Length: 102
Image (tube, rainbow, N blue to C red):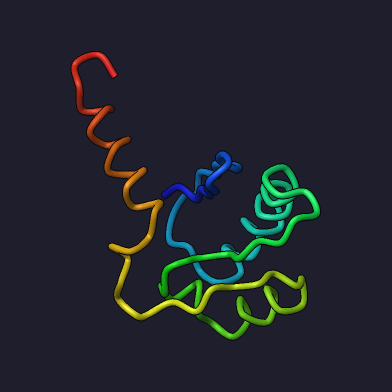
C-alpha cells in the first residue's frame, strides 16, 4: 500500500506501507509525512486536507489526532472515492507502469 498526497502546486511525500493499515499506523504515516508535505507545499498558507472515508481515516483516534494537530479536514461524503483527485493519479500511474517501457 502507498500513502501519497498532492496539491494544485505539487506533490508531497510518498510513503510505502506493508500489511494492513490500522488507525495507529495511519497516524504514524501522518507523523512522518503529512506535516513535512504540508510545510513544503503550503508554508504558512491555509489548506484543507482531504481524504476518503476508509476505516483508518474515520476512527476517533485519527480524528482526534487531526484536531489536536490543527489539520483542517474537508468533510467527505461516504463511498465517493471517485471524487478524489488522487484516484486519477493512481489510474495514470497504473496505466504507465503497465506499458512495455514505463
